[in-house]
Length: 152
Image (cartoon, rainbow, N blue to C red; front, top):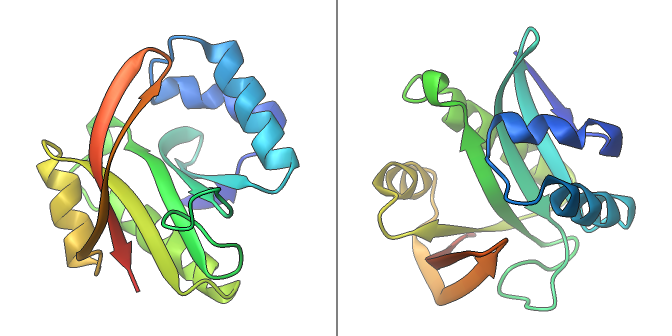
């Protein structure tokens, strides 16, 4: 398995894991955020098969989410369906957390929807046990409601 950061010219591969309503908008937004150092997108490959992705935000207008150099917000965590329940997601998450710790990050946040029991269990097992806030947002016409969990 290989963990890597996506380059902007590789962003199209994310469509393998999520059905975006507007692919061009996603690529434009991610390109801007990567080029400006706001996010990185980590991906996990097994040979040439994309297994999973995890986006990391380093700065936010809301410090509950991210504070550059201290707190990183993890989002858009996806694992290809035929690779789920095999430890790949946990491996991806633990590996990205280790990379972030090497760069001085000591706090991490994740947003998890109430009905995503598998994710809630995995995050709690890894120390995400404090709920900071309840949030509602919309992305490409889809509404999301979730709890923001913190790991210190």
